[in-house]
Image (cartoon, rainbow, N blue to C red):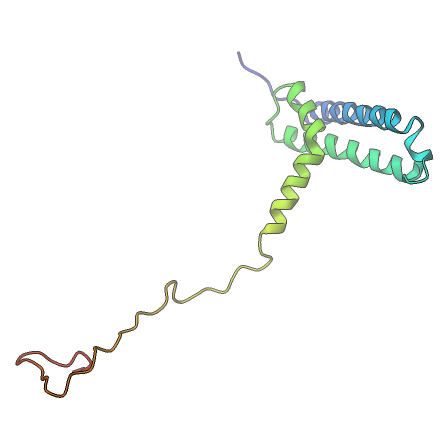
Length: 141
């Protein structure tokens, strides 16, 4: 069973539908909590801010689905709808990962490990001498 990928426009529309479903559920939950329209409460943003946030989230869902659909990666309306539903979460996670990457790569380090150091041998006792054939380890030829 083979699937033909969705077109960019089909992907965007299914993503828009997924985003719309989330927004409708969010509005319903806000109505139950507030017992009135959320933008009419004194501690909530007004209608223009509310509408702007909804439009931006709808655009994010449609845009993400269109972007992935244009690459031929979406084979079903369900997949495009899921992208619309999860778009804000996916974008947030991606941006969080981008924030963890340093802006500039670290300067190259010539040594990845600290240089080796020699420790001095314990001093010889007054009556102790080096055996024949032994040389001082710090003598360099």
